[in-house]
Length: 318
Image (cartoon, rainbow, N blue to C red; front, side):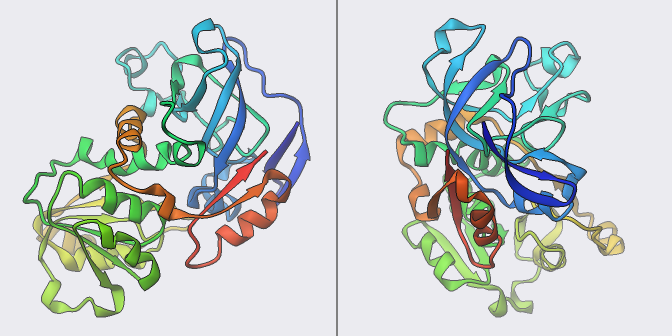
């Protein structure tokens, strides 16, 4: 089968064997989405080599659970050991022996087929298109912030970054909070939020009058400078949620965090069920975030396009 792989410092489309793992389902990928994490992996993030990609929708071809064979599905990307306390408690996201689709010791979704445990797969509602179902993973990551940080209607919240994830964080969290401000560098991307009750501000217009205004800052800029901006904008004893994954070692003003008693929260993956419910209900429009859909055969070109500043979601069709 064809797969988009990163190996020995090189990204290429290769022919590889089918991804068969004992006791797991075989999924035929119908559409996958390029994420900023994919781009950072090619730059050296996480030290991963193999088939990249973790956002997908597909059809189950084989599975030990016959009820899901033939079903259109999305999949939780963390595959736990199944026996530790975390896995037995129903949350393998931090299983110490987990593999992660297209990120940690498991070939990913930019391919014709992928393998995941049946327990990781969730049926896609009939009225959610493939193009929208691909967003289940990043939308789950966006709204998963509310699992870790208490966000209510009156919380003053800002999202730094107008990339795909930043926009999804602003959209998703606006369903819980009526005081969301999105801060970014691209006016055309911030304009996507016009249909929501979200205030938008260009980063160049951020000034000292905004310092200390926000209870919660979501840093999703994908750059080190976003954290410095977050430190300026957050209230004393406020919370900064870090969503960015990028290759490099950031520096940060530890003294300011201590003096202002700021809580730093790392946030990675969320649960797919609530994300699918939002997609089904149409509360947000992910269609606005799609830049283009390309064939998997042109995956290297698509990755290059997705890495360009200001780009939105590129999707790959096997």
